[in-house]
Amino acid sequence: MSGVSSLDVFTLDSSATSGSNGLATYKLVGDNIDKNIKPSARDMRSDHQTQSLHYFHAYGVRDRIDLSQFEDSPSLPSLKEINIHEIWPSTLDTTCIRSNFCVLIARILKKIYALLQAVWQGSSEKNPT
Image (cartoon, rainbow, N blue to C red; front, side, top):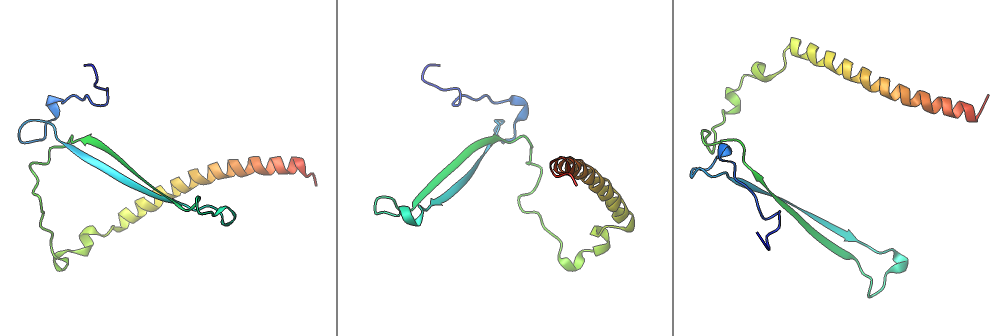
């Protein structure tokens, strides 16, 4: 394939089809970045003004999940029909969450303590009391 870069060539996996015609479908994902660069007040000249930079990045992602069985606009229940006790964490859930947080906080403090201990040892060697 002369004249075609490797970025232009892609293969369709027949096991990952999600379109109605049996071909894989893709989503185009994009994001833009806008940046204004102002020169310092001392360097402001008629030929050196604020620069406005605009960039756009886009890429295609192959759909790997078949969503054909789901409806396009699901109906949501009204707020009056929702029982808060079904979605609010129970006492057991809260206890488990607190226990997990205790473990995570202990791990973080252990790392911070090791870092602070190294800093304190280094500072005590420089400034003996």
